[in-house]
Length: 525
Image (cartoon, rainbow, N blue to C red; front, side, top):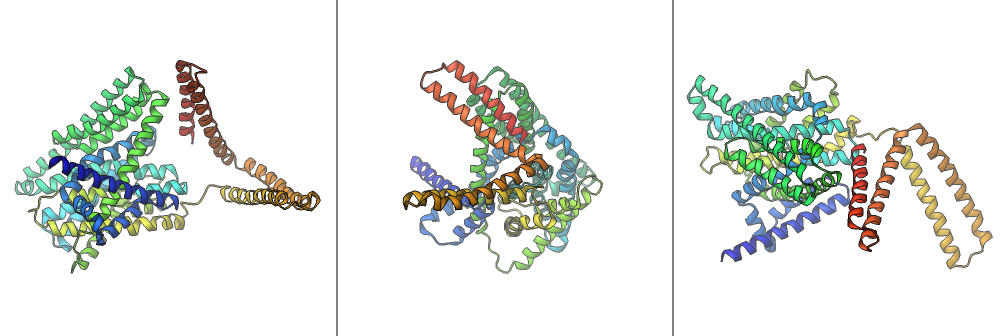
């Protein structure tokens, strides 16, 4: 019977992966943010009475299942993947806004939401601050996916991603204190305040120590191996091991994973990973993160349909307003004294601070007898849905309105020349094809072809002048060509090895050299 149940769980999981992959593929094909598409489709499936999908809905919307999948199964992978590829240099260059938003902004938001929830939503003190902690975490996946398509400034993207990595850990710590210890600390008065501060420091510090120690240890381990499949396994053990070990010591598993991945990706990548290993580890976690994110956002959509909003619209509207006010005050106040942050960026930090799967997983982990749990569920789910759909769908328009998504200089003229060139080349090909099929005489077609070729020559001259004026355009195109050339070189070496023209040793040496150049290009891009 147990085997049958496990078989059924596997079937449900496979169905879910197929649905998530299909929606993600369609969204990417039409260049739309796939997280938002998944949430919307998940909600539609949840609200629909589709008999075939009922077992899937029932299985996923079990609170314990959702909580386990999001927090224990996917969260370490998602955090690890993001931190692994984030260079220390980028963090260091932007440490002031990242740390200010992740710690100062998050804590300020926590206090504002907590007190406003007590006063306006009439939540008990523990429920108010649990809701505040849940709403302090941000999930920028959909925002960052939009950024990539628009070529938004990397510094802006780094700050948003860096804030999310660290404020997730802080939000989980604040949630645990609010849900399980806050009333006890309040009853103890001044002594309780001291205990609360000590608990906070201890949880964060232990997470930093465990993550740093494991990251350092696994980084040193990579020096003794040059075997990327094995080193990928090391990274899996590191991310999940750091999370579970920290949690077993009542430390922050989230902070531990982030620090471990940062150390492993930067220090380990420098001292113990070959270019081939770096490339393959990054590719592995790219695939893992895409799969995890696709499943997470589909599950969020399914889970959101569980809430009963009957006669709760006033409460929901007020909760959304409170969260937005708190986020605004937190962003603009915390960044007040940080230099070189344009006001337009602050607007994006504010509106782009979306809530996501972690918020839902945390609220579902509350004990069923927790005071005010149902109201917290309703408002938390509603804020997440509003955040992902309304804010997520409008962030692109806000970027355009603020002028942040404008393409780099010369890109518009470049695209116009490419468009016209492609049209004229296609026209010449079609004329030659028709001439051959219909036996049209050469003198008849030559005049038309000549006219098109003159236009092409003029465009080529315009392109030459444009590339001279904007060298970055030329550099970008050269990087693309060099990448494809290197891919071809790699395939050529593999073909020679397959046909026994060259030995495996020489092939590995040549492929390593090609891969090293590819990694350099990735960093240059």
